[in-house]
View (cartoon, rainbow, N blue to C red):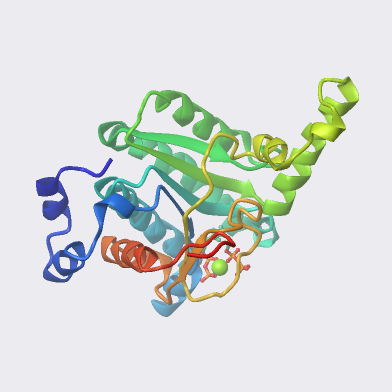
Length: 259
Ligand code: IPE
Ligand code: IPE
Ligand code: MG
């Protein structure tokens, strides 16, 4: 459900946002938007700052995007915050990120509650420092009753890893005799993914101009609309989300059929 008109107009108050708002069809807002938040490092490098400064600036963009998503009536916002391949980065960058999650979750709890945001984490728990995992689990519990938007954070997430874990789950059930192999279909797999119960993304946004998926939600994006922008993640604003949604509304989603 989008917020009421006056709240929306107050939030999207600049002239250029108001113009876009006039083009928005409220009955066709994507239910689930997923974002590959890329370009924090380049944002920092452009300013002669350490990569960590780019990640900190990225948090601000997440906050703004969450508020904008609520105003637009988006139900699910999924962000790629750390991939299963990002462990290849220098240890100090990995440690900075793992610490930043803990710090931000503690600092933002009040605001998450005020906005009615429910947090969920997806990814493989193994390898994530326990302090970071505990902070996410705690936030999941504290926000479990919220219903304005589900904020899905992909942490130590890899699409191939997720499908592998799903297969393990399915095979385990077959071995225990609780699942008939002949009954396995696409729904069975879907129900064993980390995203079980979450609808597939309608719109996938990637910032920083890279034209690749980088192992994000491989199964779930089969029919998602893609939107790539050269904007670096820390610079992503409410205006860009609005632009992406309006572009999405101009697409002709066919799902393999005809119109
Ligand atoms: C995205 O920004 C954030 C994470 C992957 C954690 P990057 O850190 O990948 O930034 P670039 O791509 O190096 O600019
Ligand atoms: C994807 O960005 C992962 C996240 C945004 C967390 P990367 O920066 O890791 O992707 P590649 O390496 O450019 O494909
Ligand atoms: Mg990157």
